[in-house]
Image (cartoon, rainbow, N blue to C red):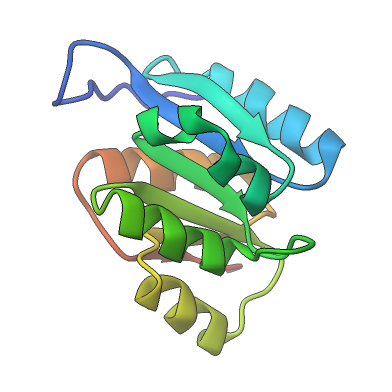
Length: 142
């Protein structure tokens, strides 16, 4: 059971999260997992970067969690667009790839964290650390 218990410093409400993942089953599992973290509220989800940007609801998010490799716009491109719209977006890029050039590109695009998809509890830890103020987090396989 997730244990992150941070309160949004901007409001008395939960942190608003938008999830972007092209694989439906993985997106459903990710959303179900995130709903167990009491300080998070899922406000939207999309199957692509283009779909997320077309949804005005994404602008309400405090945190966007996106897949790296998707048809069309990549998570890196999405991060660049999101951070251009709202520089204080927290963006976590989830991936199965751990190449250094991708990590560098993600941070250059404004991402806050780069996380492998292999363990949801690592994602929970990264979310907690981001919400506590840390930046540029990388979580790769041990």
